[in-house]
Image (cartoon, rainbow, N blue to C red):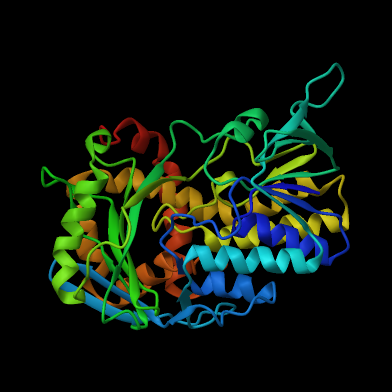
Length: 411
């Protein structure tokens, strides 16, 4: 198995497959200890995924719940502990999280090649299956090129790039995507055990932003502070992320007693779809497969779960792994993520967003459903009001999908 990318998805598939006896090589274009811009939050779902990989969270800061603010309404709620998910999450800065996961992959027997820029080798010869991946070509830090072969190539390189284009795994152009920006600052409240999310952001012209601002306490003297927005918003192409970050910082700076930014705010793209996530000889996992919740921009839990799934299927049968992987990912995640993308077209309209936020936190019962959505804790099999709401929304939004797309807000 050849794995392109050493983030949570790539490390998860590598450690699981190597522990099962497979020969695994991971190609990571960064150097050991490299950082990855991220909100650093781990949902209870992500905690469960790490536990399934026997990864201890002793270096992470425990989080017991979420504090949501919308205009003057503030609701602080504990994670609900809906089986099979625990009643706690964590904040684990990506530099430390990714380092731990890669260490575990190496301990399991995976070969780690740092400073290697890799792309899949695609066989398009006569008689070959379309876009069959047969191996990887990598270029190391010294500019040396080498070709590798294996029965399965795993694309775990995050947002679509050259590797995704070769396999036809690019983002679907008409679907939702997100943009986010974050930095770190010192705060005396760094050890709090609640994430904070402000759901009522506005751009420079006063237009409501479908997204949120966050402060995630890291327990190490600092907090992660950032903002994110969806591409379905009115005026998205004119959105200035740095200005939105500054505006949010000014809003919360006094309450959190924030010190100066510890680094320049850095932005990244959140893909929320993929044209293809598998094919002959390859699978895409995590962000590379578009597995990001459109309603919170979170994807670490899906990265870990999809990586673990891909490894288990490969160990069972390398030949059928890509087809089975695509089917199982669809069963687990598609309904929820599809509903989230459709919902994003709705809240792209400012007046719907304004009124929807009043409902989202207006009562304790609805706020609890919002909490489940923000924590990636709800899917088609979830019991209670959260699961029922998701299933109903999936049906209603599916029927209205053509209208939602025709009437979407102008970006």
